[in-house]
Image 1 (cartoon, rainbow, N blue to C red):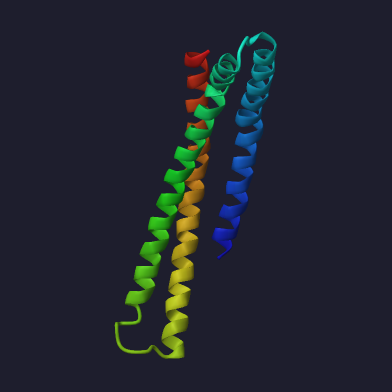
Image 2 (image 1 turned 90 degrees about the vertical axis):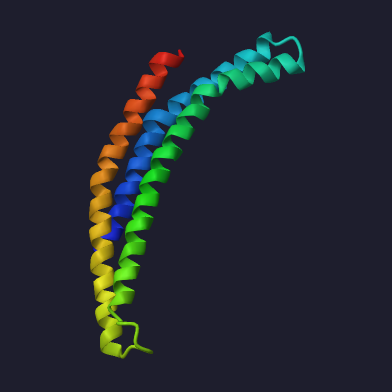
Length: 143
């Protein structure tokens, strides 16, 4: 399960990097814009509309990140489910398996999950690049 642990660390690191470099600047801009709305809005309705406009970039960025992360997680889940199927098939469908068969199935499952994690690690790098690219292109078209 070393691959899964490494994937968890890398995944958290990538999310933290995206949060620092992409989300926080948009949060700051949203808050600064909303503060200006408080100065210029003449009514509560105008204030609400103004602050909603301020948050569009941030909301879009969060949606982009969630979509990409969701796709990556779904792919990992499908791979893990396939590993579970493979391990279950190793029991041969015969009643209760003995300890040796269970151990073999568990090792098969663990090896397969590690391979899923390694595959997902490669996809994580590309996903990080895709998120950065999508957010950069949205910034240039939404400003």
